[in-house]
Length: 139
Image (tube, rainbow, N blue to C red; front, side):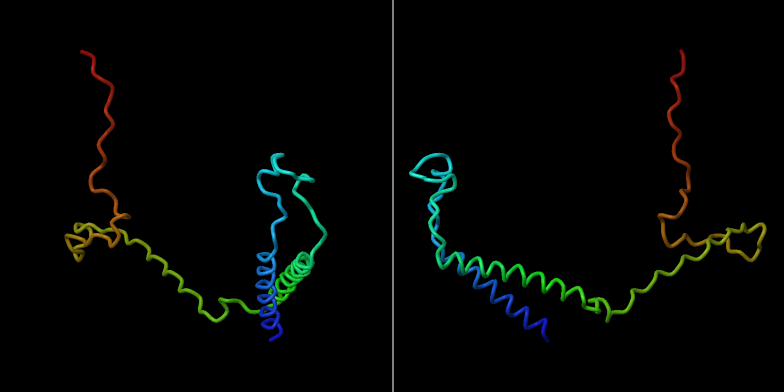
Protein backbone atom coordinates (compact mmCIF):
# COMPACT_ATOMS: atom_id res chain seq x y z
CA UNK A 1 0.00 0.00 0.00
CA UNK A 2 2.83 2.39 0.88
CA UNK A 3 4.57 1.57 -2.40
CA UNK A 4 1.55 2.69 -4.45
CA UNK A 5 1.25 5.91 -2.45
CA UNK A 6 4.91 6.70 -3.16
CA UNK A 7 4.40 5.92 -6.86
CA UNK A 8 1.46 8.36 -7.03
CA UNK A 9 3.48 11.07 -5.27
CA UNK A 10 6.41 10.39 -7.59
CA UNK A 11 4.21 10.87 -10.67
CA UNK A 12 2.97 14.21 -9.28
CA UNK A 13 6.58 15.30 -8.62
CA UNK A 14 7.46 14.39 -12.23
CA UNK A 15 4.55 16.36 -13.65
CA UNK A 16 5.27 19.43 -11.50
CA UNK A 17 8.97 19.28 -12.40
CA UNK A 18 8.05 19.13 -16.08
CA UNK A 19 5.73 22.13 -15.78
CA UNK A 20 8.26 24.20 -13.80
CA UNK A 21 11.02 23.52 -16.33
CA UNK A 22 8.78 24.48 -19.22
CA UNK A 23 7.67 27.70 -17.49
CA UNK A 24 11.22 29.01 -17.09
CA UNK A 25 12.47 31.67 -19.42
CA UNK A 26 15.63 31.05 -21.43
CA UNK A 27 18.86 32.50 -20.08
CA UNK A 28 19.69 34.28 -23.34
CA UNK A 29 22.37 31.77 -24.28
CA UNK A 30 21.40 31.10 -27.88
CA UNK A 31 23.68 29.79 -30.63
CA UNK A 32 25.05 33.23 -31.51
CA UNK A 33 26.35 33.84 -28.00
CA UNK A 34 27.94 30.39 -27.90
CA UNK A 35 30.19 31.34 -30.85
CA UNK A 36 31.14 34.81 -29.63
CA UNK A 37 28.33 36.76 -31.23
CA UNK A 38 25.82 38.92 -29.39
CA UNK A 39 26.40 40.88 -26.23
CA UNK A 40 27.24 37.97 -23.94
CA UNK A 41 28.91 38.70 -20.60
CA UNK A 42 29.80 35.08 -19.77
CA UNK A 43 30.83 32.00 -21.71
CA UNK A 44 27.39 30.40 -21.48
CA UNK A 45 25.16 33.48 -21.55
CA UNK A 46 24.09 36.09 -19.06
CA UNK A 47 23.44 34.74 -15.57
CA UNK A 48 21.11 36.54 -13.25
CA UNK A 49 20.23 35.83 -9.67
CA UNK A 50 18.38 32.64 -8.79
CA UNK A 51 14.67 33.16 -9.32
CA UNK A 52 11.84 31.49 -7.49
CA UNK A 53 11.26 29.14 -10.42
CA UNK A 54 14.87 27.99 -10.47
CA UNK A 55 14.70 27.26 -6.71
CA UNK A 56 11.48 25.29 -7.18
CA UNK A 57 13.13 23.39 -10.05
CA UNK A 58 16.09 22.47 -7.87
CA UNK A 59 13.79 21.31 -5.08
CA UNK A 60 11.65 19.14 -7.32
CA UNK A 61 14.75 17.76 -9.06
CA UNK A 62 16.03 16.64 -5.66
CA UNK A 63 12.64 15.05 -4.88
CA UNK A 64 12.75 13.33 -8.27
CA UNK A 65 16.14 11.74 -7.57
CA UNK A 66 15.24 10.75 -4.00
CA UNK A 67 11.91 9.30 -5.15
CA UNK A 68 13.64 7.25 -7.86
CA UNK A 69 16.05 5.80 -5.30
CA UNK A 70 13.27 4.99 -2.81
CA UNK A 71 11.19 3.24 -5.48
CA UNK A 72 14.21 1.27 -6.69
CA UNK A 73 15.00 0.08 -3.18
CA UNK A 74 11.37 -0.80 -2.45
CA UNK A 75 11.10 -2.64 -5.77
CA UNK A 76 14.09 -4.84 -4.95
CA UNK A 77 12.56 -6.05 -1.71
CA UNK A 78 9.63 -7.61 -3.53
CA UNK A 79 9.66 -11.37 -2.99
CA UNK A 80 7.36 -12.18 -5.89
CA UNK A 81 8.15 -12.68 -9.51
CA UNK A 82 6.06 -11.96 -12.55
CA UNK A 83 6.49 -15.62 -13.47
CA UNK A 84 5.60 -17.05 -10.04
CA UNK A 85 1.99 -17.88 -10.92
CA UNK A 86 2.66 -19.64 -14.22
CA UNK A 87 3.38 -23.29 -14.82
CA UNK A 88 6.70 -24.43 -16.21
CA UNK A 89 6.75 -25.10 -19.96
CA UNK A 90 6.55 -28.76 -20.95
CA UNK A 91 9.84 -30.42 -21.68
CA UNK A 92 10.29 -31.87 -25.15
CA UNK A 93 10.02 -35.63 -25.27
CA UNK A 94 13.28 -37.38 -25.95
CA UNK A 95 13.52 -38.95 -29.38
CA UNK A 96 13.26 -42.74 -29.41
CA UNK A 97 16.40 -44.68 -30.26
CA UNK A 98 16.59 -45.47 -33.98
CA UNK A 99 15.71 -49.05 -34.76
CA UNK A 100 18.27 -51.11 -36.62
CA UNK A 101 16.97 -51.93 -40.08
CA UNK A 102 16.53 -55.62 -40.85
CA UNK A 103 16.66 -57.07 -44.29
CA UNK A 104 13.87 -59.37 -45.48
CA UNK A 105 16.43 -62.16 -46.03
CA UNK A 106 17.38 -62.30 -42.34
CA UNK A 107 13.90 -61.61 -40.97
CA UNK A 108 11.09 -63.14 -43.01
CA UNK A 109 8.42 -61.35 -40.92
CA UNK A 110 9.79 -57.88 -41.83
CA UNK A 111 7.96 -56.08 -44.62
CA UNK A 112 9.78 -55.64 -47.90
CA UNK A 113 9.37 -51.86 -48.03
CA UNK A 114 9.83 -49.76 -44.91
CA UNK A 115 8.15 -46.39 -44.33
CA UNK A 116 10.46 -43.36 -44.54
CA UNK A 117 11.29 -41.59 -41.28
CA UNK A 118 9.06 -38.74 -40.14
CA UNK A 119 11.80 -36.11 -40.45
CA UNK A 120 13.44 -36.03 -43.91
CA UNK A 121 16.34 -33.94 -42.55
CA UNK A 122 17.57 -36.94 -40.54
CA UNK A 123 17.19 -39.33 -43.46
CA UNK A 124 20.43 -40.38 -45.12
CA UNK A 125 20.66 -39.56 -48.84
CA UNK A 126 19.73 -42.43 -51.11
CA UNK A 127 22.54 -41.81 -53.58
CA UNK A 128 26.03 -40.60 -52.77
CA UNK A 129 26.88 -37.07 -53.89
CA UNK A 130 28.71 -36.75 -57.22
CA UNK A 131 32.46 -37.14 -57.01
CA UNK A 132 34.68 -34.09 -57.33
CA UNK A 133 36.14 -33.65 -60.80
CA UNK A 134 39.50 -35.30 -61.11
CA UNK A 135 42.63 -33.83 -62.67
CA UNK A 136 42.43 -33.34 -66.44
CA UNK A 137 43.69 -36.31 -68.43
CA UNK A 138 46.85 -35.90 -70.44
CA UNK A 139 46.34 -36.20 -74.15
